[in-house]
Length: 252
Length: 261
Image 1 (cartoon, chains in turn green, orange):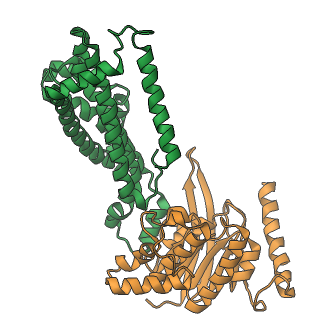
Image 2: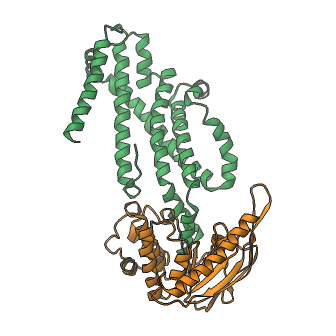
Image 3: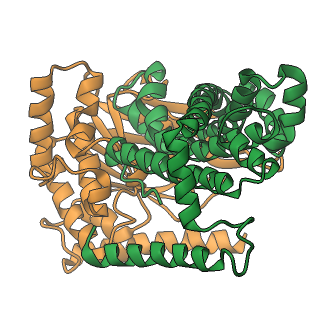
């Protein structure tokens, strides 16, 4: 990062924090929007008594497991729907229907079926991430250029080689886009699930803070969501950049 | 795999249109391509040239008749016939660098790493890209990508190169260079070329044989020429110019006929 960019980044962060600080206690009551100082104090306190790690750990565990499950199912089913006409005709209509139902809307049903335990949360996150991965994978597999397949056949590839040697590598950029989108959806899914039914996790922390009138805790929750989302997305981008140097797909 | 002639006999091709009707694209196309020839198929846009090439490549079956090498009918794609596509960005494997693209055919033929590498070097050199083997397609210009595609095809040592307007999407200067170089490559390698174009100039510059197609639908062969033009070929040679206007007249007739329909 060059000096100019660093300066602009600092200004951006300072202005954002400044607006927050000055609006707290003036435009908003401090009991609703606490100042950065009291949020930082709360953060320190929660780190000290390890409460924060319990919440964060619970949420991350749910995300990692739910996301991994969603990705595996999404890639497998997505490849099938993209590559096999019969699978596409059978699977796609109900999925096209389901993709319009946001994960949050499923929470009451999931709680009735699975109770407030962990399984329901994994389900919500897997659903949220799986759908994104699935549709991107299917689109990627289905959009393999016909002439690339034909070129490979001319060069001696057997029909059974085409999938691994041509279709999958051609779809790879689409699949990675799906995986990255799904990561974002996992964060949304976990918060929604925890807000409605949990006794731990960042979503629970935010929801509970209104009940016990602890606004600083809510903002600690925001801080965690924002920074962890940012960190995982950056990690993801770096990984993609390494993996995708061969494709040079510009990832925003 | 020795053969003497590529034959197209009574080739007809129908397509089912989106509205359920039948489009008769080709009707009764009969051609003979001698081994070693630079055979060009010239015709107005949309006359079914690419369809004919796809039939020779084995990508599509003919509705009637068919293609054969001597008496062996073409039943599907094979390593004896390699297609050079115009849309080179999609034809190359973007996740492989230039060398890996060229090595693809030898790899499919299960050649060892050393031999694969030798072949890649040899053909990259032949197309003038020996210094660019490590570059990926997105790092190469359209003309360079087309060179890679030619090298990739030659590295597989096919008998026939099927070329579907390979230089049509390139800028005029690159196109001119590649035409000249490719003719040299053809004369050095002795491959049989089945070339498609709608560019009369290009056809006269490159070919030993030229078939002019009638306009579609139900397109067929209007006339076949053997081109014994003065070498090096140049539009300023009188026989080149005379041939040009003769072929142009034929094409114009077809375009008129198509418009009148």
